[in-house]
Length: 532
Ligand code: ADP
Image (cartoon, rainbow, N blue to C red):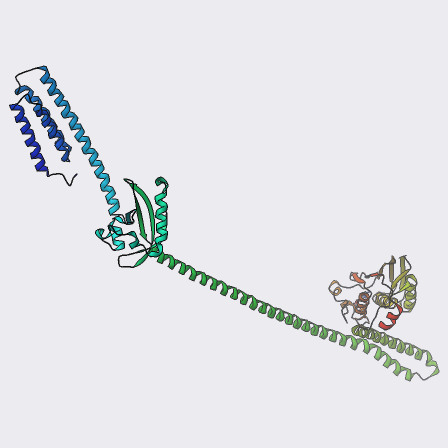
């Protein structure tokens, strides 16, 4: 309408002329109805002028003309004429309202059309509309740019030209599907295809097809998006993802290898450390043993020099004196010295006995020979053997309770008892009592040897069972420091335990706990045992 509208000046002139002609005709022929129709034509003509004010202006002029003609150009003042003029004014007003409404309607339609046009023209998405013969009827500038066709070239072009042959079937099926679908439900679907440009170059695209009907004719509107860059970045992304996965896999593998290596090295290191610790322990054990051996050696040397020298010099001096007593009257003196020599030899004998026993223990030649024996009788016999060693006024007492018989190695137990009793005698003064207490349940036996002697200092207690050890308060009393060591080893062989409680100058108590041993078969005993 805008395009076909004559120029504003021309229109205004025409309408003015029309109004003047109408006015003149009315002036000359007052009774003519044409006068009013002319005014209505004038208002209708303002339809071609966009501005509403023009319509209002001519409408007002028309009403003025009608009123003016009523006063000045008519002599006859009849009712019919007045009614006619009033109707004319009503017609002018209605026409004016009609013209204004049409103008407003047109303006709004025009506005919407412009917006739709802009949407089509400036849409960055390529829009192609084609009919049911698959001929393009409309393309927007974006589509023209994408495909390389001008608007004129594109119009009437078959859609098959811009879609490669391999996609024709799929595209045709989709179009058919949309055409047969109920229009309201036809929301369109993305079609992943390749498109072809005017120069033959192909590119990946996503086409969304939508069918619609206009005057019963079907049209397909296709929104085409070039996804070359998206595809490239997708491919790039996939490639990078693959590379990342490969790197991750490599890193994980390397990590595992590293972990394994570290674990392996750690194990080797740990083993080496253990080896080192072991050899260190062995070294320190060897060192300790050597130290211990040196101590034993020095203790042995001091013991031997003392314990052997005293009886030997006694024997020597007695022998020298005996040779001087040649008279018969000297017999008593000779006997005295012979007794001294015998005593010294006995002492030396006992010393050697201890060495012999220790040697056997070290060589593992001491075997246990359990046998049932009368314990009460056994202790009294031992008392009897020890009787001659008691000092003046010393006496031994036995407190016995429980069973009579007990199964153990009698010979080893005797050695133990003799050792403890001789120590009690040796380290007690004259007139002191030595108390032996025995509780025998048959399966277990508790043996206690208690004296009222010099006792043992606290600091010496822990070393008493080691070889050649002698407490400080015992250095002037004869002894080897072997007795308790042998006792402890015998008790171990008898599967028992020994403990000491003592206070300096208040005596000593030795406690032994024994369990009954099973009697070994005679053959086995003979094979495995060597008498001590
Ligand atoms: P020995 O009696 O030959 O010295 P032992 O091995 O029998 O050696 O005793 C070790 C040390 O234990 C003794 O030198 C002594 O110091 C201490 N001892 C053992 N029995 C007694 C005891 N009844 N009273 C005090 N001291 C004792």
